[in-house]
Length: 160
Image (cartoon, rainbow, N blue to C red):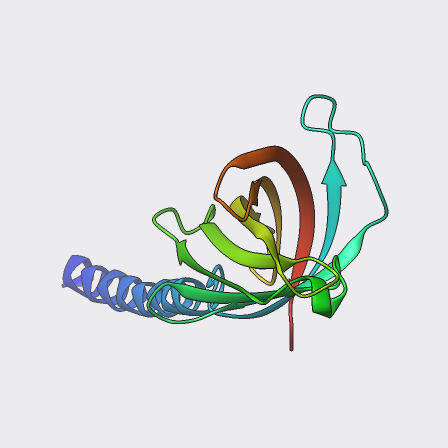
């Protein structure tokens, strides 16, 4: 009888433990490490070989939508010289999402100068409310030819 009572108590304890751990896992999976939302970023252009900064940092906004689309705006270019960024994202690895976007660049007279294509590999911080990313940017002429490649590093925090 004593053995049966011990089994019942242990069973109840394990049941409560599973509820507690299971509930925390659901919150962890649903809220932390979710890219969807608005992020404020500080971006630094870097030398692709050395990693050294090549200019002052600038601010960007990223909006990641359900379904894998995104929008981007940046203070790195004055508004008349660039359009908004539009792109895609994937979180096949929830700790290391990837995203890419493109935007048009314009000459001072309003004619098309070309486009940029930016591809990012991100890593979430422990809270899930910040991430760092490294990016490679293809700078293309209006005819689509590659002019140069630029590297970026950024830190981003969830806008709340």
